[in-house]
Length: 331
Image (spheres, rainbow, N blue to C red):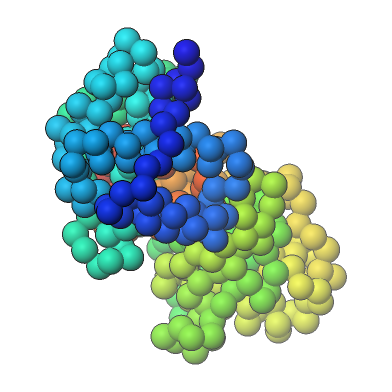
């Protein structure tokens, strides 16, 4: 018998709102482009169907599911003898996300029973984290503050103002990796129109970024930190003054040539070294991880942060969650 078979129980007609909760969550995930594979939907639906049947049989409403209920349910499926810890982890993460989506739609207090059970059961909580899968690295607060100060110094009126247009471009691109969570590849694909200033608080200052879809993620929008938005706004002004043609937000040359991977990598490395950032190799993703952890520490929902990052794999957000229980000092 497979793990999928253990959860393979059809949803029963019932007066509760289990069906509604499932449908609303699934519709939201599909609209956001986070759940696209039919095979994944089938696995999740099988899990939710089994929980529905068990709760209805025990007269438990969807909004009243408790930690004990979930523990008893897992034991009813055979516990650790028949269900792998990773499968139980995946099931509890699903329950947590479905109930969280239901709470948001109804404006009610979220049911945290699944998250609490994971907190109580470390053998399940870390089931999806292999030792070879390290926690995300990020910039300590002091280092991040120094980097922000260094990046922003290129703007008019600052001590480092008057730099070349390439220097302004380089710093603005690094600012978006730290202040908007985009990847190096996404930086190179950005166009001028993707830096959105309309509707923001300050005229001409981009406050959100449109990131085009690619093989690893669907198209999305992500907020830009105010300090990063100001730097990007200045770069746009410099870009216009230089008369750079084309649509690339960060071109390689004044003729509008596309920025190559190697050239951008070297430019980013030089900026980080100049700012005094340690371990500059692979630093681009440390910037992205710092953005994600900063948003989570500010109380943003993991699902919302995932949508900003273009993340569809729950395991990615789970790694951030593993960092958060311990004191994390991020900017």
